Amino acid sequence: MQRVSEEDPKYGDVVLWLDFYSQLLTPRTREVLELHYNEDMTLSEIAEHLGITRQGVHDKIRQGLNHLTSYETNLGLVRRFLDQKIQVAQAIAALDQGKVDLARETLVRLHELL
Image (cartoon, one colour):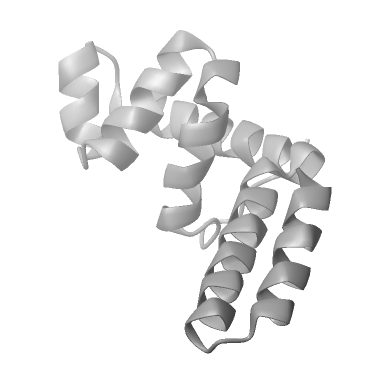
């Protein structure tokens, strides 16, 4: 399994990955990641809340990040979602500028992805 470095992934990426892939994690790993990333709890706070060691929390976070990274690498759901959002924004911008043909082309491409 691909190992997550200390700098990666970005906080926003993890939050999105959790939205898409959290149900694929074990309940404990999911809980630890959601407390840390969604509830903004520190490792010490999570450890106290769950009755485990701070090191145990750290290990669950690393394990969970490795799984989330792997899911996104293999499935790419978040990347596709973000690409679709960009295409919708481009179509709206084209419509706002009166470029109906460009908006139509963009929407056709989006439709083909779906």
